[in-house]
Length: 326
Ligand SMILES: [Zn+2]
Image (cartoon, rainbow, N blue to C red; front, side):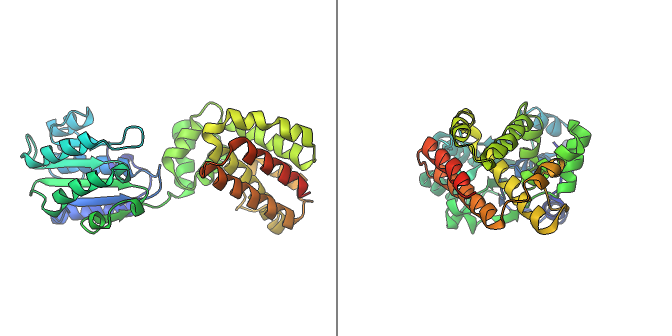
């Protein structure tokens, strides 16, 4: 892991490098931003640099420290992450024990706590003591997508580094050059994942994401034709994809959003389903009010399902509502 392998986040990386250069490195950081942007990758590259024996602004990738870091075998590096949605009490206790002893090999000890908001209050309070009086050799990096779930007393002790969505062009280039995607597919993914490199790669390498998208586009056709029996029989598709329902409903949302954009502006660069433009134009007879209603209903359904409403009922209602609008 190296800063050069990271896509985007130039500003965050620049800030960290400047601090290394000036010797003004903080004892504790919060890396904050949506999931899948690359926060953990930046944290790892930063940790590796801090531990590197050559003490530059990039890891040298040659010293014993860099080698050990790469094989996840560095005695002064600790990565703490949740298991089943929770950072265990034992993990936090271990961390506190390790903070108290001097480094073995480097001049520092670096701790990364990924998904730090998944610590319970007891864990956070324990960490807080360390953050209040950190030994000289300690650097702690908390990574999170939800600072609102972290104690304000912790936040105020940490330097906040914000992570933003990565430019679509950079993700597109990566998916085309390193993952062999077609340009139209890569562009779709960069927009669909809202600038998340991790999520884009996950979908680009998934066996069936684009097949599912085709299925949904066909289903939209059926729905818009008002075939109620076929609409209800499609519930099986949703049940099969329960685990990724948010993604499935996002495909719906983007498609109708594109339809709306097409109605207003014709074929234009804001449209995400560029490879389906003929299909979209075919449906442009649908009235704007109705498209807006459908978008609203899909969004509501996402919320209901997130709030643990009955899955089958929520989906069926959405499908029928979509039809009644027409
Ligand atoms: Zn090194």
